[in-house]
Amino acid sequence: MNPIEAEKPTYVYGLVKADTIVPDGLTGLGPSGQVSTIAHGRVAAIVSDVPIDRPLGVRGDLVAHESVLDTVAAQMAVVPMRFPAVVEEHAVVDELLAPNEDHFVALLDDLEGRAQFTLTGRYEQDAVLREVLQGDEEIRALHEKVRDLPEDAAYYDRVRLGELIVRALEQRREGEGADIIDRLEPFAVAVVTNQLAAPEDVVNVAFLVDRERQEEFENAVEDVGKDLVGRVRLRLLGPVAPYDFIPEE
Amino acid sequence: MSVATQRGGGGGGGYVDRAPGGGSSSLADVVELILDKGLVIDIFVRVSLVGIEILTIDARVVVASVDTYLRFAEATNRLDLYEKGGKDLPGLVQGITEGGAKGKTSGVLEAAAEKVNDMLASNREQQEVRRRPVRQRARENEE
Image (tube, rainbow over all chains, first blue to last red; front, top):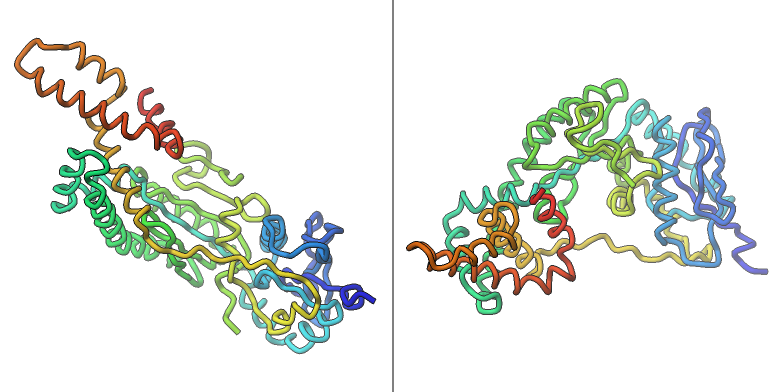
């Protein structure tokens, strides 16, 4: 017999309290497209079947994982699993829920009534480049030199110019990112800062917010966005599952 | 797609782009949100026993490269073009050229016009390939 059929692999999206009812209309990443729960004691795992004719981890799998979790998170506390979480069906209870029930209940209690919001900020390129040019003599001088030379002749100067600009942006964002976080931290239960990817990124930070204070938090983000308009473009993602607030095991 | 509120419009102030979770996010959002995050239990490490192949998804590696530097150098140069050009670059160039040899400033202006022309020419090839957003922005500026 095929070992896959024997074991029946099961995908686990996350964990909820056993007495909650997960929303209808969730679409799983398995061939059936269905999502269900397996409960044990006070906790339940949100699960689905798994595609067995292809490797797991394509675009649709990632999106399904996020979509299921965030749809659930919009309504109740959920502990997201790290993608990709596959186990044999029997192991969901035997090895996941039963041995860890108390621990999972504690995690869910902590997250009750809370949701994550991820805020990213990005410099408006032209505005901040003008500031950098105005504020740094070396950059301005190099820029004027490069401007007057043919592109290939000025190659190394242009690399150097870009490098100085990137440094200037990185320096600038350190303070500005911290200011943004300082203004919003009072509205959150917990804050996790993420690594920035591009030089024009100013901030990437996750806030765990009490639902009761969600509107207050959102208004505060709007205020920050208003103050930064034209210089930094803010983007608020959420409410989403508390991906950044699950303690490392 | 993900834009629920555009800045400057709509209710709730609209100074911040909003994206609710739950299937309305872009793939980039999703990857950034979920990759390497969430609860890890050691039984998941035994995935291979179940016979499922897992694709490796690498988180973005952040290295400021020469390409990045050149991108910013070019962006700075472009900034200059806008400031000199004001509204419509080709129009400006033409206007200056037609302005011709009258007056004592004409030499300078012609030199400037040539320079702008050079820059336009040297940038054009790259613009075709990867400057579409820039050109769109230039067009918006003209309006």
